Length: 276
Ligand code: 1HE
Image 1 (cartoon, rainbow, N blue to C red):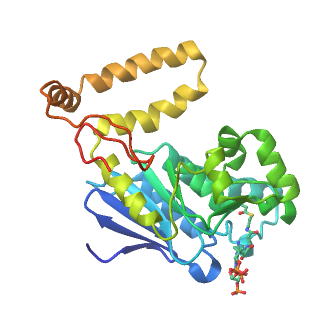
Image 2 (cartoon, rainbow, N blue to C red):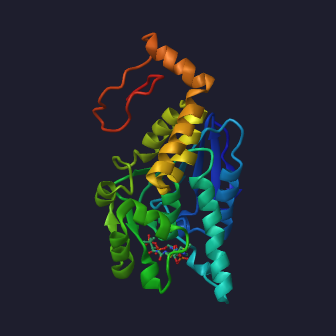
Image 3 (cartoon, rainbow, N blue to C red):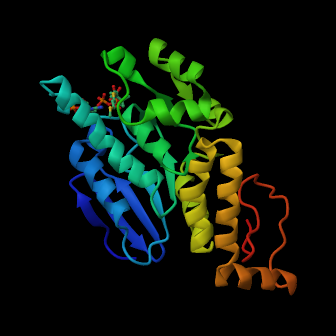
């Protein structure tokens, strides 16, 4: 394991084989996101290092992120406000629709722009301390980092409306029930679970990871018939890969792990084995 590289003043990257561990590293300001950090994240995911197949996004300190660095809210014009919001959209799109799956580890405050960043990741692992809020409503502003698009798709417009109008805070247990996180783990074990999931994901065929990241969210937004058609194309592309053929042969020869119920309710067996 090498020394983590600094992507910016407040974010580091530690490449461990196929897994890059990205750490928000501004605990003294509760990992408030300044523009340089948001841009650095976008730049990393636009062009991940060769050989990196998956990323884990975590944080230093007790909190994932307190959101937008409020000391940066200095726009003097409406147009600059539009540009500021757009400059968050592009990096977060880069994460969501990029080429490598991202597993985030959520602890403490996951609020405002911090929640928007988490929503752009693909798998969210929460610890019991995690809580979700959109204090924008109480700060006299609106969301600007993608929450209005991504959060209602997870929890519904009505719940996001409640969070914004009343400042309602969602705790980790409710967040898990509502689908904000896919995994809820014990205190302090989020990073281990995220690394375990990342290892599993890194063993997938790259075509499968590509299809899940690129095709699945697009199909979900299409009409059913268009979606089914694109699904057929993507299925044929993935089945045609040498890797898929080899994995199917392994299964048919009785050499692959079977899919069994997982007592943890978490990870199930992959064709390459190693279920937990
Ligand atoms: C900050 C920020 C920040 C903390 N920008 N500096 N987000 C918010 O409205 C959340 C604001 N933050 C909080 O509610 C609290 O700080 C926490 C609940 C996250 C943590 O509380 P605590 O008691 O552990 O820490 P603290 O004493 O409040 O903060 C420690 C320091 O971090 C302090 O600075 P210091 O110089 O006095 O030590 C805080 O000022 C600083 N700090 N949060 C700047 N967010 C694309 S649009 C997105 C729009 C949004 O994200 S709006 C939501 C903003």
